[in-house]
Length: 204
Image 1: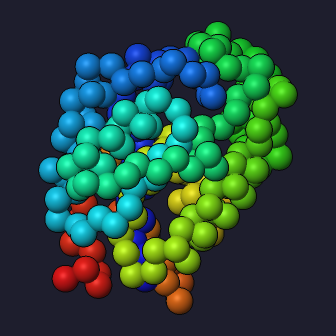
Image 2 (image 1 turned 90 degrees about the vertical axis):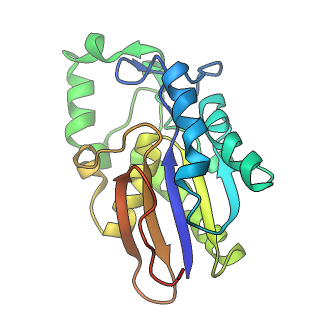
């Protein structure tokens, strides 16, 4: 049984206002840095074996305090990167609200995509593939993955057996922790959007 701690990056000034996507140079703000600094203590009840992050600065800045506290090497996994929002990159949500393409995208994520961007179903395919590889690499271990809201929602929806059209039904706040266990049987979602790690079956 592999236990995955799925952690959204800490707060940035763009969260909730701007679609930064793959844009480099988006860093945690003061609140986000404080959130990242508390992560080692919030994870101290689990025997963490490895930590992986998306390549973007905001995820690496969130993961680094945990890696330092545990003496681990943060590993970059490109497949955990944010959705590629294509032509919507750096657009404000408020400016997109009246766009029919944007409205379609939010109603039917399974069959739509941003202009010149990436469909959420494709995000789900790459992230679940990466997660299953890590399950084989880390049997019976606890692994942290620091990524992005829709990227992590796509993973959770897959293992919940729910369509990606339901993506907005899952709240994943900055620096919050969801817990997924993969073993020989059915996957188990232990927690979604928690502040701390709850008692986890099989970890004592």
